[in-house]
Image (cartoon, rainbow, N blue to C red; front, side, top):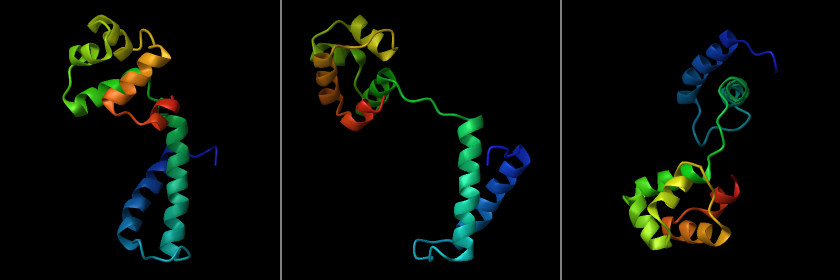
Length: 120
């Protein structure tokens, strides 16, 4: 599957759009449409992993997203964590990494998933 062309990729994308309305939660796994959808989905996934790789999130990007979702400012976070706003800015922009104890505080305050944090 290493030599998938852009034309094959685009065909697979089109085919997925055609198959999606035919396959539902209750469609048997051995249904021809379901089988074909699995195959073309694998082709698309493989092509995209090679040509459109997604970078792993950073701790700073997780923090930025959580701040946005919570409607919290970096200054408010700094006050709760007990560090300067410029230190939080460094973390947010991946210029430095917090200590383990500071990370623990940030994770708790921002309600970050430990699994997401450990995955970076």
